[in-house]
Image (cartoon, rainbow, N blue to C red; front, side):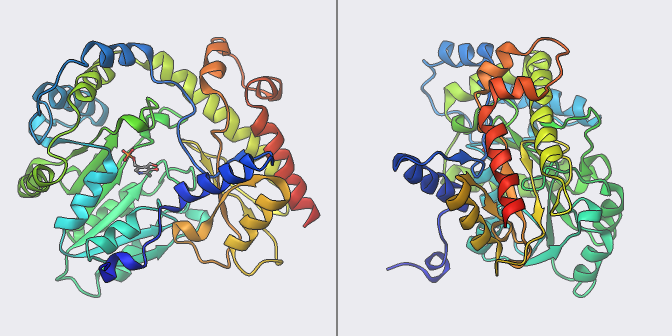
Length: 408
Ligand SMILES: Cc1ncc(COP(=O)(O)O)c(C=O)c1O
């Protein structure tokens, strides 16, 4: 009854861990939900008000997205990138995940996926019937591919089309890509298309966020949306910025949009105008301060001879590697951690890392972000006292994880 191509696909592992954690919790076990990652904060109030005020909008909007919203995003993104984009370069979708799926459907070529990568790129490539080349990366290079690793693959067959996925700040590593310029030279040399997944860009802890589009704008599709920076994952609004020279690609995505989701919910599009034309700097400053403080705390507690870990640069993930010879794969290790400590993590295998690497993704969002933000005084330092008060699960879960490392 099922097509071969979907037979072997399982539900997204991030959603699965959420369900398992819930089952254990229902049976009375205390669970530290460090597996599933979504913003712990509330949506800024003026954006919520905008949604309420626009609930009456009931007609289908244009399949590319409402012109006023696209103009607003074009203005916002042109300023951020110091590159001129117009409303014609923007397409609005029900989350970037859906737009990326449509891209895989229309793209005819091979996909270059750095390992580790976000969980959905690979299954989407499979559904789009595109061959995937995993590019193994190294901690020394912040878990991003070196240009020579990309070149090694694409130089073997220069006739093919290639699409490279880059996600900085990264899910799962929490790190940013420091060799964008080097990668962009290979991108230009071999005419590679890049999907720059910038969904965590507004949550970069230091102010100097750089995108590959700064180095090769005409080769880069930028992917971003409301889900992470303004905590509106459930609203389902994302967008692609497609440079003018890729107009044909824009036209084809529009066709697929018109035959699938038609257009994004009208009230959400109206509210998104407010999200992109109102000043959210105070909200974002607080969100970054909290996330950076929480990430640094976990880093400081975990780093040891037995745990190799990098301090996160943005977003809400950290990716420890445990020096441990007791498990044959990272999945078994994460199960052991969950059963013994109640800490739910995702194994590195879910992100394309070799199973024998004892790596896991820890999502540090198990706290009440609204309360934390309300109580964060201007210029306050996020120290252990504050964390005990407003992120007690983070403190206790990290302690238990450290205990597990020391006893295993
Ligand atoms: C790296 C990455 N890209 C894309 C997405 C999807 O975001 P959206 O809500 O826009 O579909 C996520 C969400 O988890 C993500 O972590």
